[in-house]
Picture 1 (cartoon, one colour):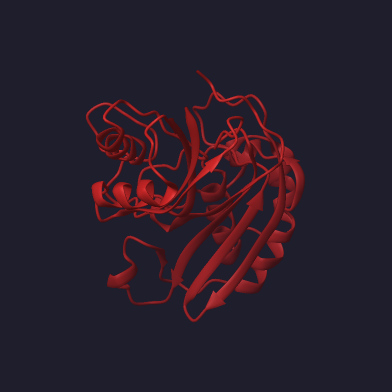
Picture 2 (cartoon, helix red, strand yellow):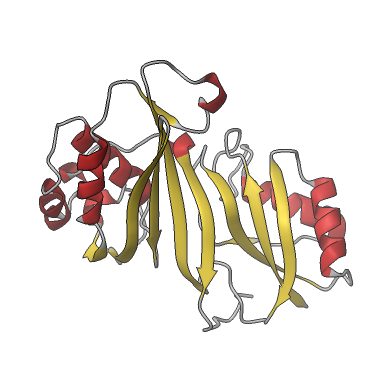
Length: 253
């Protein structure tokens, strides 16, 4: 059996997230069905991150195993021929058998897109969160800096979850503007459930004057979800990139 690393781009609008579920379309199930049609047998796909319903990806990584004798290029072409138009395979490559898309990951980059203007934007209605009243960009940028570092991020974790380790090392928490579009960028070794969306929702409250930038220290210290702000809508979130460490973890059988 050969282990493959697969990089995917997708529009999550019409999917109930990454993880396979009964009676609803998901990214994982759709990719597995495409691979099964090619391999002529069931194929299990492991994703680097379980993106929520409506979340998009520019560089989701997945791994799978198969003994079908196709080249990397043949896998890529066949997979894109079977996938729907809102999911694309960007690359397929062979990797060592110890590679695991989720457990071998060393860091992830997420972006959140927010449109801040008084008029709605039809073209981005499912790609960005619309906030109509002006936001204090400088205050949000200052507040984001308080989030960087190694912290217990329990205040930004949405329940229920089976995670028992709330510690994350957030190496990047930056904001930039492109006209009316505000882009939040977060890079960390790992993320808790809906952590990015919760951080964005809280930073927006800073931008609205409901909190001050230094309040982020109090929110982190509280370690309870009620201390932070709202969870931003899913449709503004993008998994941009997944990075990998050299250490390999055995692929589960």
